[in-house]
Image (tube, rainbow, N blue to C red):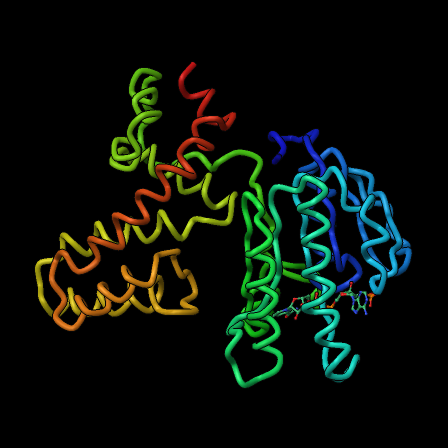
Length: 326
Ligand SMILES: NC(=O)c1ccc[n+]([C@@H]2O[C@H](COP(=O)([O-])OP(=O)(O)OC[C@H]3O[C@@H](n4cnc5c(N)ncnc54)[C@H](OP(=O)(O)O)[C@@H]3O)[C@@H](O)[C@H]2O)c1
């Protein structure tokens, strides 16, 4: 899916909303980094795209009110990026719901039917299907619809406009162009700076033991970097935070850390909310009434199991790991 370094990328992706602030920046990155062999922009109008060096972009113009008639545009892509959206002031209430929820959900269905494995949706901070605010409610509803489609991977980004602006100032040249967090797929995991590279024999053990991989500083750093490229770094970050938490001696520090971990990873709509079931979440919250070294054990185990089942096999297949064991 993602390209190798220096990249003639493999696979195909499409971008919805490529004319918008976020979509434009995403498209530039996709082209410049040559992450995919094929990049298709699907939009309601043809764009005059500046000559960028990198992957050429195909364009397909569709009528979003008759999206099902354009199933072919969504066929054969590995990854779909969706930066579609409007506002109530531009489109009215019904128009906003139509674009931000219905068009997105229909596009996701078509993408899935067309073989897409990974859908990346730009939603919004605070998205919540039960919110009394229309914007947040619609974002919550669309997230739910997209998640239900059944992609192998579904990534939902929840930026805050404020955050974007702050980051933009330092990270991007043009203040009106988009964002850094959506820039995915570093061509190769960053090399861990200080950790010593393992021998191939040592690295081979990681195939069958996530525990050994995580206990090795080089392994942990590589794995985190890999997860970052897959938008799921929060799992490893949570695991690391729990390890640190368990070693904390001072009860005061432990309580502070428990609060931080809860706010960062556990609570609903936390910035790096990890995917744990209701029961585990409820048990964890109960444990936090009186924090102890084992307060997060259950949640940490769940996330470990998730990474073991889901991310480790992909890490092991990655070019980076294959090089390590040579
Ligand atoms: N940028 C932010 O700070 C931020 C923060 C939080 C969440 N978000 C969310 O991220 C998404 C993208 O934001 P953005 O700032 O990049 O938006 P944007 O600049 O307004 O771009 C919106 C994109 O959606 C397309 N679009 C709008 N109405 C359409 C319609 N009726 N039919 C077909 N396409 C339509 C636009 O195409 P045209 O060019 O043809 O109009 C454009 O490509 C939105 O859902 C937004 O709510 C953005």
